Amino acid sequence: MASSFVLFGYDHLMALAVILTMAVGPSLVLRSMNNQKLNQGFAKWLGWVMLIYFVFKHLYGPLGLGESWKIWLPLHMCQLGHMLIVYCLLTGKRGFYISILYFWTFAGATMALITPDLMYGWPDPNYIMYMLTHGSLLLGALYFTVVERLRPTVESIWKVLKVSIYVMFIIFPLNYIIGGEANYLYLRFPPVVGSLMDFLPAPPLHIPFFVLLAYILFWVVYLPYLTRDTIQGKQIPA
Image 1 (tube, rainbow, N blue to C red):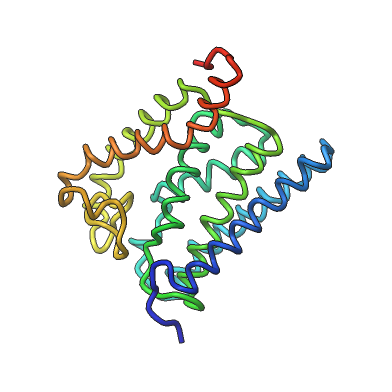
Image 2: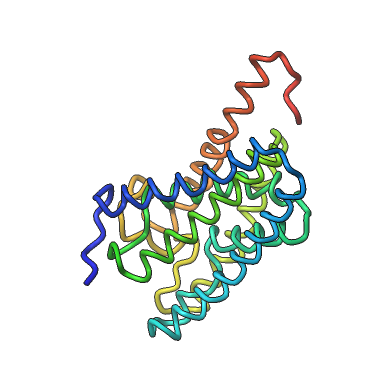
């Protein structure tokens, strides 16, 4: 029987260690081998695995666990990102990754792993699916970043911020139209586990601060490229 989830408890730390190993390891191996055909095969394989898992997860929640379909719609940022990463992996198109997914994954999915919105730990099915979802996102993002060496630009920060705001404007009324416990993008109430949202005003007054926080996090995850470009004396890509 699953016990209550403990932030930075044993289950949480073990999950982070496993996810980090499984996400970083394949990308480093593929980069060291520098085999284009192998890279393309891995991308297709990962895309299909993520797609099959995505469909399974969103059917298993309401049908297998008996939970309300209202909380199992793919409308959270990480679920939207999951679908876009699958699209990039299977189609070979990378525009969404450079302009959106780099930031959504390394800012959003990473924060989701650090402060998971979970009631129970291992071996609760929701705990396992939550970690698999965000771990696969990290694996996909690291593949693009480490193996294919794709990178965002300063302009990408403004693009992802605008896209994120547009998505929020769409999801906010949908939460109330769907009703029940629908709380996509956490626009109705904060996560059950402590997060940075605990320091913001109560919803919906938190939204402007939420946008500002996202903007700051986008710059934080872009900082490695900004630092490298500055040290190397390169013109910062716009």
